Image (tube, rainbow, N blue to C red; front, side, top):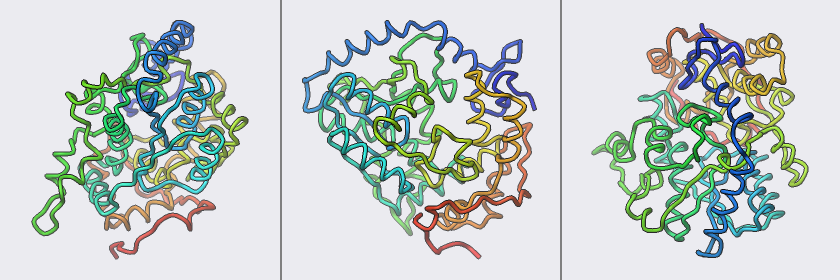
Length: 388
């Protein structure tokens, strides 16, 4: 399988392309970020943007927040650097882990900010998980759409135009490229390209609504991008903070650990020492998401963590590839929980995965290496509707 000569991401990675030298677009974009962008000039644009909105509404801005490393840093940075008054908004996808909950409580107490958390109807969430998995082998449609659309709904409700998301999409995919040298705005077009998997909320309602179990259309509102005309009335401005400051996950994680007491945690399949920045530790379904990715694309979370390390020229590619082989593809304990939620057997789960695999990868369903139960496993919500 072809892979980037610099970061070793394979050709099955999302939106990846290679130049004639075998370097991927992600690495080329990152090189431009490090060497070509005038970050002092970008910082001045951020200064102007914040002053333009300061004091014009009940809140200066809205900050979508999960409690994980990136959203914690963006909240900390904006409040410390600019002394703004934000409304902090969390869309609770249903899988938040205890350490993240403690981090959230501690962060909000230390920083001092108004906080709203929205938790959607669990019965609807389970239907959405099953439908999006069956159609796209991605059970997180509700999470992708809710995290980005719900804060904009509160922007409308409170008439707060400025919304700060965290890192730009260039750090993870190719829908935005640093080489374009533009500000990354989160508009409806990007929402439809990046987050809803090609399935609108209206589409999803038609898929899960049945005569035997009717679903109210209003239950899909949290996953719907707000009316663009209503957003235009408040001159909405949803931007990525990473467009204005040079995003450095490692340095930023060190900052929030030191200044806020933010705590790391284990990640399914990945020992803590190999995940020093706490990638994806907020969600107890992450292990299953990464396992699905490994089955479909032939790489998992360890490969992604190590690719970041290699982009920053701070790792030995051969040693990191050994870690990829060791930890990618380990079957997670959370898989059983997911199957219980949606009422599938593992055999049925595999039958949906197989036709969605990305060539040239062939899914390996015979890996019997199973991850250990994490310390908080017994606290994860479980149901007993698994098929026998």
